[in-house]
Each structure stands twice: as structure tokens, then as C-alpha cells.
Length: 121
Image (tube, rainbow, N blue to C red; front, side, top):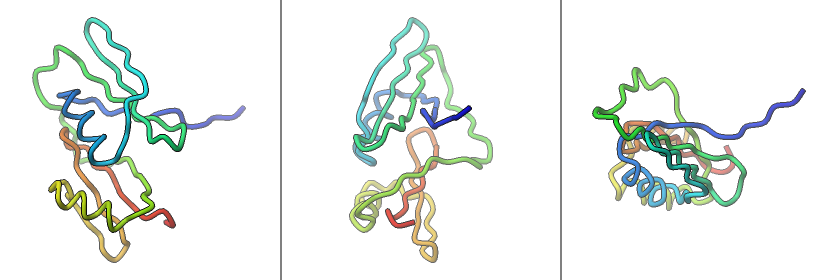
């Protein structure tokens, strides 16, 4: 029996804002959309791998999600760490940086942290 990664999910409060964030900050594109009466699921992809980020939007949701202690995160490599860092600095979305390790985290509109690291790590 074999398993392979398919997708990772974030529940989002404002779907359009989240789609725009992931496009601008991480160049992720909408791959598919499943719009139902009470929820919408959008899959984003990076155009290089088969891994997908699922954004789930619950249409009746009235409050932002409680992310607890945020002891989880998504991580992406970049082929141009300096350019990515400059973009994310300009966007004001870097929420934590560890210069010794050569990594940093950005925060999306819902408070999820995404680790950015150089391609060789």
C-alpha cells in the first residue's frame, strides 16, 4: 500500500481576499472551484508540482477562525529567496524571521503562517 500527498486545507473567511493574497504573495493559481449552496472549495496550485492548497469557504461563517497556538504551517521553496523576501517585506506580511536559519514566515489574511525557504534547504 502506498500513499502520496494530495492537498492541504485552510478554511478562509474571505475567499476572494485569500485567492488574491496567494496569487500576489506566492504566485499560486486557481486550478478548480467547487461551488455548493453552503460552501465553496477552491484548489490552488504552483504550476510545477501536483500538490494543491485547498481553500474552503463556508458561506454562513460570521467570525474569523481561531487558529489556536498556530503550531502548524505550510512551507514553500523559492528559487529567488532575495526577491521573495523583498516582495513580502513590501507587502508587509512577514510575521517571523529566523536569519540564522535563512527562513521566514508570512501570514495570510486569516492568520495562517507560510514558511518561505530557499530552494536548497
